[in-house]
Length: 571
Image (cartoon, rainbow, N blue to C red; front, side, top):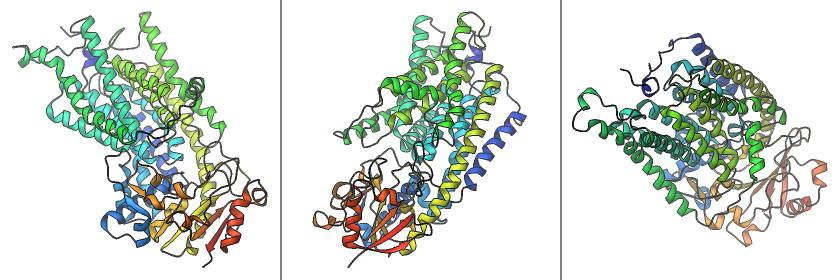
């Protein structure tokens, strides 16, 4: 007799009947992903905020480790070779930079994400029921969202590896072997190397699944399906041995993540901790899909339905179960409800996590992408709900199209600003230092014609300058934190010795750079002034920077529209 949970526990590709490999939906999905890739490549110059910083870090790591760095770079930077959870993209970028220019290398890297994330999510959601492949459309609105636009490249690749790891686990947890345990361990380590947050989410999801399975066994022995032995195991307690195998396997696989996370926390003891936003504001952020919004609040028209879809569908499924009208193939309950436990643990973690800790910030905004995705994954595992498949395809498809149109409008416009910014590089002598003074306040265009909801218009394009000529970027903020592979030396760290408030929407830059050499080993050779309009020059506090420029620097370049000015230190 078939076990009542066979449909759910058979995690092979044909658990509930294989979907056609070349179905119309699959072709449409591939077409949608292709459009996203083409959209990425249509942008002449990427303006994703931290993108330039990542490119610079990859280049610096290469030249410092190979001993080919210009003396000025060795004077200011040193490698930071530790097991930090922000390493994944740098070897890849370093290899790409040997062949391609920085902008092309960046696009090739991101093409891997634009393709990899939707298909990794599709791999996970079809682990039990291939007919639920349309639920993978839910990932598409998150591709061109805030994490990408902010340039959080390690973080967005952690999404890829998280769902590859979960998909692998969900296909094989009833039949773990030493080889499969090793694969899970490697997937967990790659997820950790991409970003710590995703590694913690992986542990919470697998932990939630394990706790739920144990609860099922305690309440109703055999209900988890783990005691079902293969025919050759039905002697000498084979079924009992089978019970603990997946728990031991996943505990061993996740152990390196736990150890590395504890070591990371110990290394960062004493770092500043900030707990905002408050719980009510975090709830509002979840309900309107804050993690998707990048350029304008109007994106909420598309992000809110996406955010609410799993939040509404999950209780609807639970209510239907209670009333005996469940769309789940396994009946009113499923051993894979452990993924719902994992989603709830991730949700609770999103309320408990500080917004800034261990040298990193914006933790709340990052973590909020996971509850939606893990909740949709649970729905895919335990339901066979045609209405949900149709709703997901329509809502996600419309949202993806709308968000992509908004993103392309802003990114193409920003690309024109970046092109003018790049005019500065020809005026910078190799072997020198440069400091950017951004008067736009990170939320306005350099001409003052446009405002952004939460992003800078050009990011850090000056960081790309260091790839083609030896220049020290004194705005390379990642090099002032302990979590990246290259750091400023202590006596040349501009964030210790000269930086003021940086780019601030309310006040001009307050960096004290003219006399930096009297209190550190820093000398500021070039100052790049961005977005200095007459109105901004008249702001309270602008005199601090302008007086230093007048006292010690000469103007050597003004860009076509006057948005970029390059000042050189007088000898």
